[in-house]
Image (cartoon, rainbow, N blue to C red; front, side, top):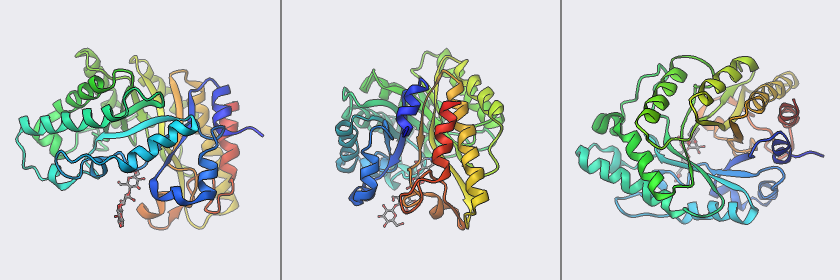
Length: 322
Ligand code: G3I
């Protein structure tokens, strides 16, 4: 029967993919599904390419876990979305401390981005990088992390230019959550993209994370309009971290609603030609980040904790088939 990446390709998309993480790779029942290139044509490292993992102290680059994920993509014939170059979370304290003046922090940022992106440059599996992750507050204002307080928004073109020089072939993205439908944060992202384009800064895509809640997904036409508002700016979009969580315990009604929610979201990407692909933020409830972050919530993924497909799986297929 049809599998996720195959169906995505038939719908004209580049990939259907999943996040994965190094500790999970010892689970052979899990990896048997992960390695199936008909299910997953793309992978993202959930943690191991982040700043704390790759430059834990200044100039000390450690790519051991990140290399394992990149090698997996290569071996399995999957695309890689690099995640991420600069983010205010999982940032080692030597960076977040605020100990550096603007010139020094800018140079630290450039070195980090170019070393990280350069590490995987030219590897055919590399499709894109989330160069900047989550720059906005939910009201559309910029955050107050060390980059914004020290460098203001100049850190964004600095990171994008460094990534572009390090790998001119990678698609460079800004990635965020709560920009899935029209509103202050989506508008702020569009304003940022316009200004980057106006200054000829390399920017190729916006990643919409899509961490959603069962029964609270906007209508498909609202999602499509919002995706098109981004593609109208001359960039591509991708759904980068899809999951649809529920308040536990799961019931058959909740699982059926979740199936519909997945269909709505996947169908929105399918309907927009500039939406290049969809990534789930891991495919199984066994390794989902949700229960650790939201007490009493979970079961957000298309496979359950026993690695059995849920109705959500068929919801994804239906979304691609339209
Ligand atoms: O590495 C330590 C380990 O040494 C320690 O023993 C253990 C005990 O808590 O924690 C481990 O670190 C955890 C890390 O994941 C690696 O497993 C952190 O506590 C945990 O907070 C961290 O969570 C990650 C989260 O980002 C951090 O904000 C999730 O796995 C990861 O899925 C999640 O991914 C983010 C995207 O990057 C950006 N968008 C939102 C998404 C969900 O939060």
